[in-house]
Image (cartoon, rainbow, N blue to C red; front, top):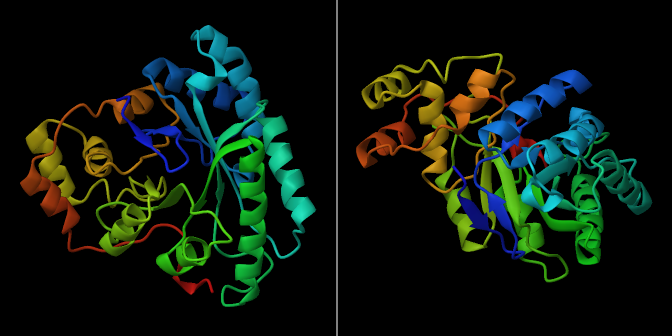
Length: 290
């Protein structure tokens, strides 16, 4: 499962990544990354708010040599949430902190984690000012080579248009959004593809706190027919559409299961999954952000 996608920045991103949300602690981070690298993952997704960047940096310092890998053999993503209290210098300092914590002289992909700014109400028009300020710094560091690509997360078309339609700003390389058979938006996907923005899915399996998506009767029937798990079917559904996926797991068995996607879902089953009658959103809702 080593498929890659060419970003609009000219860099390749692995279609399959390893999510680290809610995985913390030096020993736990070391173990899951050990399992992940051994299984074949070469893309690691983190964020400042995950509070695990330093632990990831420390683990990779030992694990890359163990697997005879160099820094350029792996792809690292991290993210920043805009804040009403952030000046340009504050954003610069946070990006530099991420570089230090991850113990690298460049980050492959740095995302704005959310279109809204902490400290502001979702409908406050100042949200736009703060995300544009944050974007300005990310693209500045990109030009300096500290970031290879910059992107966004949880952006809707209305948020993307601020960047795409204004020649002052660069078009994001990636938009990472909640995406699974119960929550997907073909209009957003079409827009991103038209503008050269790679769509990447999170919460492909729902959440760790709810198994309702994985236990959906239609998903289970298709999985049984294909001799695969519901988890594998949900991941393959997005992967087969050239949408990036970031499955998160802690056990070696699940980490290995999530990368074992070398099968094809028939077209009729793909359509059935895309047309699930139950609609459900598990994560935050950006529609309310001005």
